[in-house]
Length: 340
Ligand code: KG4
Ligand code: ZN
Image 1: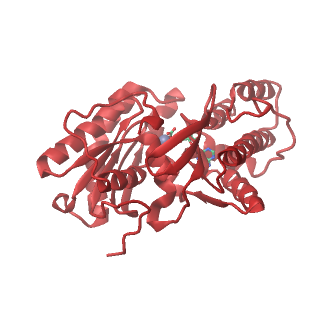
Image 2: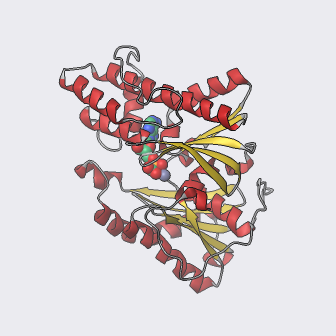
C-alpha cells in the first residue's frame, strides 16, 4: 500500500465518502490523501432541458444513483464494505433534498458497519482538494473558491481554520460562464464550452466590465452578464465574445487573489472549485504567483468540479482529529465556513 502522506493527523484507513449537494452523485474511497476511486454520476443531461438545476428532480435522481455509485466506488477501489473504516458525507451547504440522500445513505452504511462517520462542509472539500495524492501546499495560504454557486477568497491558516476575506456580492464566477454559454446556445453547464470556444477567439475584441472598482476583495459579475447580453443582442462574434468574457473573469479573479494574499501576508495561493478547471485561469494564476516567487497549487482536473474524493480528504482530516458525528446529524442548506 502506498505510504499515506497528509498535512494533518490523518485517519489513514480506508474511508468511503459521498457527495450529493447539487447535481453530481459521487462516491469515493480514499486512504489518507490517496484517492483509490472517485465515481461521479453527473445529472447535467437531466437539468440541461431546464437550463439549470431543478432541486426536486436532482433529489430524485440522487436516490436512483446513490447505491450503484457507492458499489462502483468500492469495486474500483478493490475493496468490500467490510474494509471501510469510516465514512464522510457532505451535509452542508446545498439543496436540502439532494443533501439528504447522501446523508441518509451514509447513516445507513455507518449503522450497518458500526464505523464512525462525519458530516463535511462542501467548501472544506474544495479547499482541501489540491492536497490529493500527497501534494504539498504550504499553510497559511489564500484560496480562491470559484464554482457555479460560489466565488470566495479564503485565508486558510491550517486545515479547519478558515477566514473569508472576499466574496461575490451577486453572481458567482461560474454563473458568468454558464449564463454566457446559455445566451450563446452552448448548453448547460457552459464553462468548459466557453473555454473551448474562446480558444479560437480574440480576447481583446470586446471590452467588458470587471465589476467592483478600487481596493476591494469582493466581486460583482452582474454587470458583466448584462454587458454580454447586450453584445449577444447586437450580433457579437461568439468566439471573440467567449474569449473576452473568459479574459475579463480570469483577470479579475487573479488580480483579487493576489491582492488578498498580499493583505493576508501569505506567499501561497490555491484555486479550487469547478471554474478552477479553466486552463486560462490556472495559467494566469501560475504566472502571477511565479512573478512574485509564490507557490501556486490547484486540484487535478477531475477533482475541480464536484466530487466525493475531496469530501474524503476532508473526512480523513476530521476523523483523523477524532471528530465524528452522531445519528442526529442534519442537513444545512446555508452554512458558514468560518464556523468550522
Ligand atoms: O464546483 P462545481 O462542480 O459545482 C458547484 O459547487 O457549483 O462547479 C461547476 C461550475 C459551473 O459553473 C461550470 O460551468 C464551471 O464550474 N466550469 C468551468 C470549467 N469547467 C467547469 N468554468 C470555466 N472553465 C472551465 N473549464
Ligand atoms: Zn462545489
